[in-house]
Length: 274
Image 1 (spheres, rainbow, N blue to C red):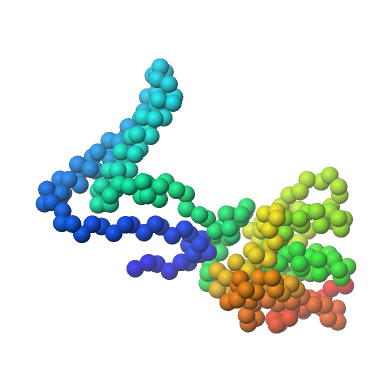
Image 2 (cartoon, rainbow, N blue to C red):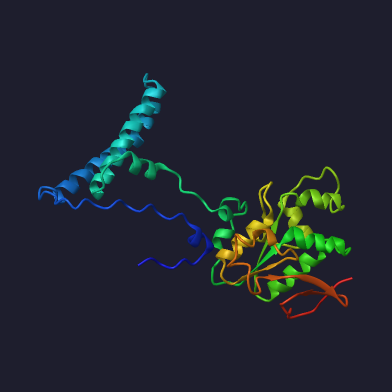
């Protein structure tokens, strides 16, 4: 029985290739423990040879050319792979070999996570996913710049939520345009942390050429206890994420009577701005 995933990394891990069905042809009684034991010994000898050949080549200063050595190692590797499959009762085919050597695809949420924290997010923890650039522009339009995002993140953190802020790749350019840091200052994650009062494991800057919207929606899709903070309705993605974009999946940001508020979510403590 497969264990239920605990973290986002577990849930998004590449699925192992399904083994081909074993042949229904009855196998000879000669193939038994002795056969498997012989294959095990052969596989161990081949692995030893694969590891020892390069070491021997370096230590002895052998006259064998590097290209020839690599060919020998490659042949030994193919023989080892054949032995592994033979012991499992799986025919050695080019398809099975390519399946074994081909790198498994990694989900974009994990592949582009420069801080490496997304895979550790627990699925049973409540999480707030900020559309960071959108909330920042809301703050700038209200002469508050980074304050709304930082204050909301702090309050929701106090309420027990895990915070993840997705920023478009041009966030540094926007901050520079608005005078958040002087020209010539080197861009760094620490700069984002300081400006928005965030932790290193709360900042996710998406690759250039891609909108953070897609990453917010993908995270909502795979984190069962989560909602987004954004004033963008993501209408361009309605057909792609119909199951995500329903109910109270997003909370808009407003300022009312000098207080920063979230629509459809009552904060446990008021946030005064001005």
